[in-house]
Length: 343
Image: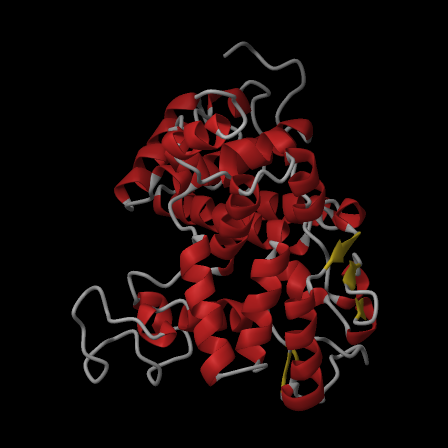
């Protein structure tokens, strides 16, 4: 690396991370901010382990050493890429305050991902979603879990958007929900005000939500006096609550199906009882994002125009194709066939 134009000023790793996070607060969503903090904490720990008290002398070789250490920790390519992409942005900030060599950020080489790795592997397909909803409708109608799954599947919205909804955002009569970015009361949207939109709801979803509100919703408010749609006895459902309920509902045994792994409920580690997140240990349970990916894929498979899906789900068309479309090449071919005469 060439000699920097301006002299570097000593910068301790943890101080640098704190400065970076303070700088980004308000510029990114709370979820992104929290994610960056978690990722950079691993970098600070690595610095401590290697007695690095000042970031000034860091070189590309040090960055490569950190990358190798994270690989040894067993990170999958998608997680490793996320860690290194965040590190690069962080180091650019450090360079802007004369904390590291200005060329250092560009020495961070993130791994290239295959198309499958970019899209991820967890996705709820239409048939499985229908089975889960049918089971809930028969045995747990209009419960909190039923309402949550119905909402996520019908709209394809993000988990954070679902938990941000207040009763006043839901228009039962005209069958739509109005999403608002409210960071000042701890319900930001992923894309800030660009994520605000009205989403049309089908009649079945509206009926489930109405009956949930009338019969089963915990009548509680959040810390700001707002009346959330998804509640617990303590107020607005947290991210972890929504995530835990999704893991629980997407276990095959909780949708009237036999366990594909031959496990017995009395000995299965994913059965309720140990903790509310025990269900995540089921190989077939998924997080809320898999419902979003499945809903998007289902719309695309039904020939919903890409622009319509993009606007409804609040995702760029390039990102939609690269990260969300779980259709196989064969499925796409058969879908194109339907539009071509004499084939």
